[in-house]
Image (cartoon, rainbow, N blue to C red; front, side, top):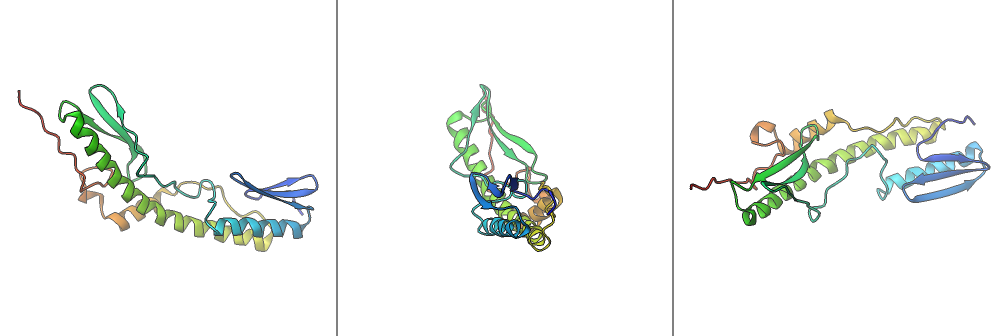
Length: 189
């Protein structure tokens, strides 16, 4: 048995251990049979979808966990643009809308964004998990490390955004929010 590195599987003196997040399991022995058992158990953990492989999935956002920061002249919240998932900020300047209207409008805007982001993220995670499991099964069959390092697949994400939500031209913002538009009014003095 070679000393190759398997994803989430660690060789200890006299045993093999699986570690995924806070979950772990140890197998006595270091033979190929023990390694095969460890790979099988690891694969079952990922198939159960209770644990997800690091770098292969996109985290979902919780609509009850929205933070809005106050910066004196404006309020803002951080989000990711749906195309390319780059961090961006949605701001409302308090000179265009009073605070008691601006905060609920920003929350509604972000809730719609979260719903759309999570819709795309679930599809993305489903596709990436299938890809990961194909590599994991290959490892189980060959006992040779074949899972590449997980990284964000921008092309797949952008393709899913367009297929799920339509073209970016349909929206007037990079967050693909349509219903919860923030109508800013400038008060005449």
